[in-house]
Length: 546
Image (cartoon, rainbow, N blue to C red; front, side, top):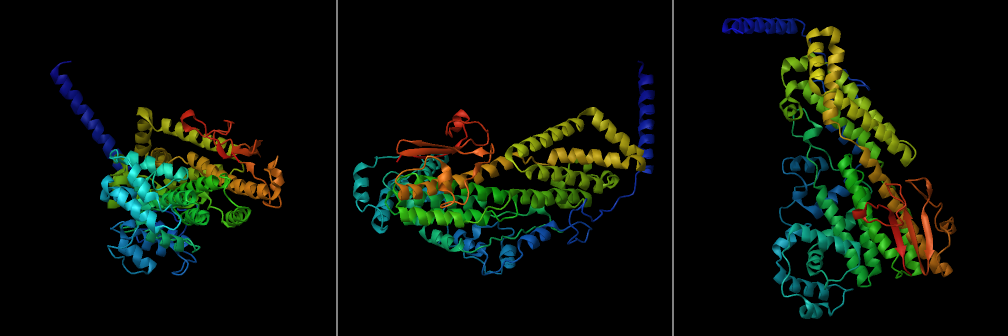
């Protein structure tokens, strides 16, 4: 094509694009205000000055009901964790809401294993263990001397993986200070903060307010407390329980396990999904320690009966669906409102194509809110199915539908439809807004399918730990373990739980002097009681050899 014709085509194309732009601007619909209603904002207040909902205040109001300075465990836990538990940017505001004085920078606060290892090189550990052994009532007083004679001249480098491995060993099985001197020293350093935690779990409520730095407040930029610290405290309690159990301090070991399991229930009150998952993780750790004690053959009849009553008195864990239905939903709706208002805090959450004021004003954000609510409703409905199989099936359908939706929002065809709907203005505004909503939803909405498995897994571990302790009591009274679990009810347990994963009886069989009890786990396959993750086995077992 001659150069002159190329220039003419370029001019023609430029004019056409200009015409399209003028048409788009002329047909650009006026912005639509957010409608405060159940199907859009889900709640009706409190309302910010820009017409959006203050979800941060709503969450705090709901989960802070009935909380006082006398019943809130969070206030005491802060004394154990120290100021670093809270993010520096919001620390003062959190303390103000809780009505407590600023925490001193230095104090007897919980020390993480990483920090302890950094301050205590291997050459100092023998001395630490010697002090630990001679000042702890139930430890072998000869441990220090034995350690000096048998400890290796040098130890491998203490990288993070190595530390985690050693900590895992001390949580999973009884151990001695001689076997893991660094862990023993670490526990000794944390005696005072663990006493504070033990006092905190006697309180019934846990409320740590959410604080946003934005104006208006936004859920997305609320800074959570250090949940990793809480989980590490639970591991510390469980490790000390196993140390005490090895040394014959059965009552002390049980006290530590119950502290960990009560801590799990407190953290499980947190409004966030992350907080509730941490609570469930702590409960799983406590259940494992309970099973270790129950299947050891070392508990007396009186101890086993008292421990069983303790387990039956534990309150249930909070329903994880509540966090999905409330805090997670509010988080997503709040992100939509950030995009609607176009404030500075919306920049990081908004796709590039929506950052312009003109484009945002063309969207009916009420339609976007309705789409997000629709998918949250589907997740909540699926999670509330009565059986694990029904939940799994329903969640799979939701995931598949979201994947199909994602496919529709990709490619040139989807982009072309968005442009056409946009240019059309008012007549196609709803379709345009819904396409944008689907694009945002498929990009931002997390999947909650795995949460159902985790929740069911932990609930099953709780039931098995009670059954394991009831079996100890039965054997102490009858001389042998029962042939069937039904023998435990109603004298020891009101009912015998089913395997939640298959809605059938749990697997149980007598084995010589012991037994094997297990659930088939989330894969719903009978793996013979094996929980070897390397082989993709996920049964949830309790085994007694005597």
